[in-house]
Image (cartoon, rainbow, N blue to C red):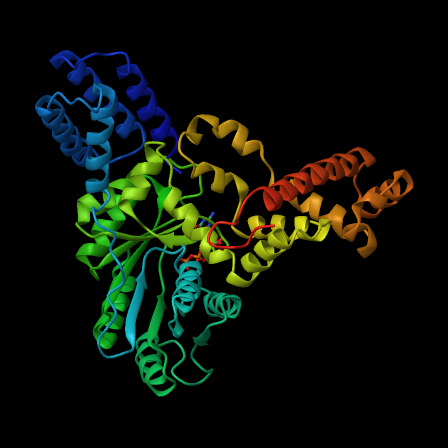
Length: 445
Ligand code: GDP
């Protein structure tokens, strides 16, 4: 996401690196380059204008600093202003004092509302809530079934109209869902509403009726980041129509320029609250303006990486692995597979690497890393017998040929895996033998 913008901005900064101090001309030239980068990324003109004005003003007034060279100062200013444009502070959901908290989703058809409903439900559940998904998109064929599938995947109950009982009236369904949530103790209700392909008065009126009937605590406007400048117009229309409290950007995984998304907050004054980056339920996160700015400026997003790791690795697994290390027991191919699957669960490898600082420049190489490689390695290990996994030394030539055949790879691939495993095993031995384990006082061999 935002790759082009990111590339452009980092190249602007690298041009500045050689300068000892910034003249008025340098500032003007830099501002021009940033302006072009933003416009090319589809950021709306009024937003660009404001942004550039602020950068110029602050760059001129920037004090000569001992700590930062001119390029670093410009990066710092751009970073701070970018965070501001993206909304400043992270905006969290406001939960109602008296449950259920009602969250209503609004947006055009195809924006990703139904998918988002599932993602949000899963996320809320992980946060300890008991959400109820409500199917009020009774227009699009299959929308109800789609929501039911989402609910099943998220492990969250779905409230949908029973045939013959108010079918076709989303307002009644929405109202009934709140009574149901109270009755069955759901503390959050997520209402999926119908969208149209374009702005349409009937659709907007329906959204307004649902709003009036349910008095949502949060109305989230869901917008596809790939639609470019239209995102801004659509946002404005929804703002004037049903109104909303926060924005969810979807499809940030696409190779869109994405700048329109950067404009929505500035134009509507409503914060971006969540971002969606794929079709899977896990491809979703709270939107943090500071972290996003960091990613755009290729400063990395270590915090998100750490959080993903924490969410993925449960305590038990970590303790088991640490205990294994501490005891000096042999590190087996099963452990190797476990570790790999833990990393695989964190999401696409490319996304993970992309969160490290300075990785922007290596994007091409990262794009070539294929998650399927990990799956192939897993397939190879799974084709081994338990004995082979526990004692990889016994894997001789004929066993390798059998394993290759079983997992549909070449003997060369099996060889390379076994070699890699032995060097991992050696490293684990050294770690276990050479140092105490962090956070586990006294555990030392
Ligand atoms: P709705 O009409 O607003 O309910 O939209 P849907 O939830 O049905 O989504 C429309 C399409 O976009 C579906 O094919 C989804 O799988 C896809 N989609 C939703 N969110 C994302 C996302 O973040 N990334 C990608 N790549 N696809 C998404």
